[in-house]
Length: 294
Image (tube, rainbow, N blue to C red; front, side, top):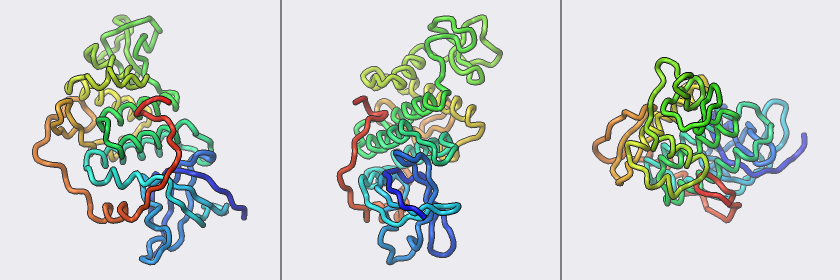
């Protein structure tokens, strides 16, 4: 066996045996890595709390036959501390991690751009300075561009005719002209297409002045486009709590027609909050992400 070291974000954890866990990491140099963290479910574990979703860590691993073994962990950024206390940001961050996990299908394939996107959006969610819904849509659009699924927003997705066009077809991959428009294609507002383009390009000045109906419509198109290419529905996406442009709350799933929710957000599970509270944040790298450009 050989030792290697890398920094990464914990995407997912799963139980193994009575005291172990399988940790899925999105690392800077090696891409997606699945490894066993032995004994981390015991109360006396030295680094069990550091290997929770949303954690940005520096890890040392042993190469194994099927799964690697985590031997050391150091926290770089405890993003969970700023995320789990807010239900909207928590559900958004869960959708981010699941999206990254689904898009990066192959293990041990370098995906530096996706790693930087995930770290950037988690840092922005933890800071709480931008709207969580806009951050999620910006991340999904850029992640799809990384995977080669970027929607056509300035030209016809079928014939390439320069736009703007008034119809949007998810199966065809974006806006379509009048001649190429298939039956069932939606007709989003021009402001919605402009918002999606602004999120893809990182134009936050334009994105943040958008109205709530435009944001909801854009979120529905982005979610539909993503799940069409993934060929499956994300489990966390319907749980994402969308916020309006005026600060009120609305629960939105996969369609822009979702109505406003009533009452306050559901409480964050106390166990998650306790685990996040045990993390000690330290200085880490600050890559660019959906919250802005370098």
